[in-house]
Length: 399
Ligand code: FAD
Ligand code: UDP
Figure 1 (cartoon, rainbow, N blue to C red):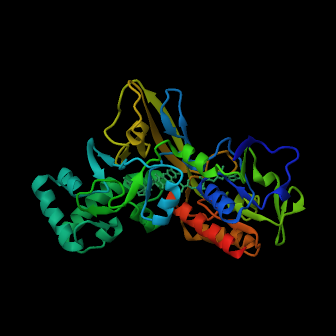
Figure 2: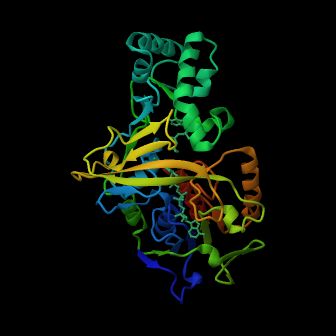
Figure 3: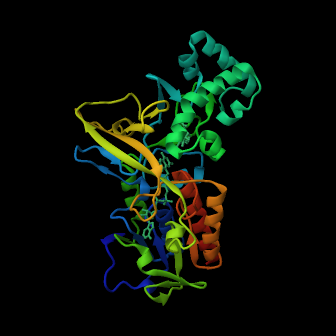
């Protein structure tokens, strides 16, 4: 692999069997698979000055490994994804835990057996827990909207408490809408957990952090003789579509294009901009060993920010006397403002607009879209890797 900044003046698209736009998970997985599986020569174009997409991490001035685009915790139930990524890194056995700060009391989220006792007191908490076990069984994930639908006064008391104290205000901050106004699947990501597992991803078999960080994982993944990476290159400057023909650097291109950027951007947003939420991330380095007891504390009833992450608690890095934390403030994304479109907003009008853009590329045989931006989907890392693996399979099998 080579990484160059900018394109050389003699850049020749025809030297490559595939051009990949974006060096995040979607792009890097496809590049590796095509280089290995089909001996494709691959150029990866990335407009940022680094690889790894939103998973990028680096050491800040205090020497603390931070995640530039928000806290990333690896977790998956997908064996193929886990095996694939494990070729490029070992994972630590970090198990992510999140506490909600509810009027000064820190309670595990997902709300669980322990949270019930903290919220309702030992005796009543225990009683309510047994009600939940009777209703749903033990070690079960119950979406809050399902719990709210139960017609039982005691279950309703639990549902109301969790709705008011865990979901309502946090969701208003994150999405500018109440929980009832957003896609139920979004809150389904963080269920009530009827059990004692106090991890953020209860019962998920593979979780941890890449032991040398995410950027290193990407360096290993892209480290292949047939892959060349060009950062600081915006593919829109050289990529065009004419009917069902892809054009690169002004000439028809016969190789495969893997596009992992936003589809509306590719068309100058001529049908309108796809809506997203963006985040202001405020990093602060403190002169102390530790700030909070776990990786992330969610502020579910107070403050303007949604959560504080303390990176050392997740990476296990030892840096005496210093720690870096980060607060997240969510707001609507303004297209063309230089903000990062972090979260898709999964609503019917937005999906319909996305489908209109998608239909424009659907019949171009060598143009493929994959990833969180290009598919306009609220994917975790493992979901993107799975999607990229199957796209690469398809391309390799068609050859
Ligand atoms: P990206 O990582 O966005 O990569 C796309 C790349 O394409 C970018 O680098 C971009 O610069 C580049 N690009 C776009 N357009 C162009 C262009 N025209 N020319 C050149 N390059 C271009 N997932 C988890 O599993 N666990 C977590 O804890 C977790 N935490 C998250 C926290 C936050 C705040 C966010 C926003 C996401 C989190 N995720 C998490 C999700 C995870 O970040 C994504 O699933 C994954 O990074 C998406 O990979 P991707 O390749 O699809 O997109
Ligand atoms: N959520 C909440 N309170 C919490 C945690 C999550 O209301 O303490 C809701 C909120 O709407 C959030 C969604 O559940 O956007 C998904 O949470 P998750 O932690 O999975 O979001 P992400 O890590 O992707 O930002």
